[in-house]
Image 1 (cartoon, one colour):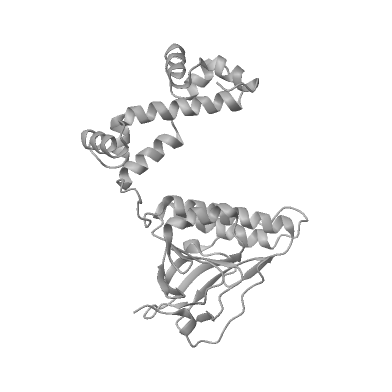
Image 2 (tube, helix red, strand yellow):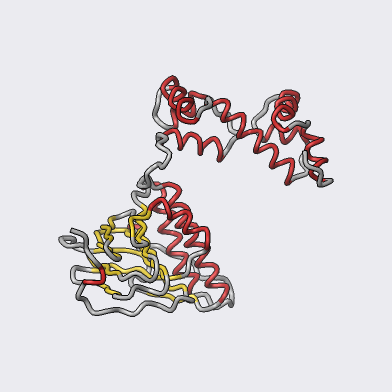
Length: 311
């Protein structure tokens, strides 16, 4: 049966003012709970490192275990506590106003009532998120004089000074902490496997497509792309072509041409260097296929852009 956060009896706890960035790390035992019948004025980001917590917002709830990022939007009654039956709940938390792009990254993970559960985040990414939270705590204490303090971690990734809370008062400290939190949200939402694929495309095919887009100049083949998602080359090529309506190699060619076009637009690199950077072994072949795609050879394409004439 759904838990309604506004019906929970615990004593209300105040939330930090919306203009501040507040960050901390707690390791709580059974009995710990926070209730805000009117919600918070700012967003709450929680990252669980051990044990288990339970978070409820409106009529939506989520349990949080190690590696789960659970985010509560403002203005909705909420409650969070050590999960029933759990022996502890160790977690990082941050209250702040998010940057505009974050809501788009979080949207695929919404459970309802502005509760977002980004889970599970792969184990290989968790150390980086842990380090980013530790850096947030250090940067929030920076006064602007001298270098920012180092973000330190102890055994098992636990932050030094567990239980400490810091408020980023200065502009530089606030922006630095938001930069770290932005990297946390981006890494978690980009790597978690909990969001449903709205188009029905196999997640393995989406991962291969993302790998092509991230580094189109790499020496990708059907075999290497298939191995990266644990499929046989024939099965991979069949799935990719059927679900994305083009073969893996056609997708790779399109990504390489787009990468080359961006390099022509943004740099003064010679065409031969751009061809190599985009993964083309032959500058002649590159010029030919680029002209077929964009209607002009690479040099002419760049010249037209520089003269503000559409290619």
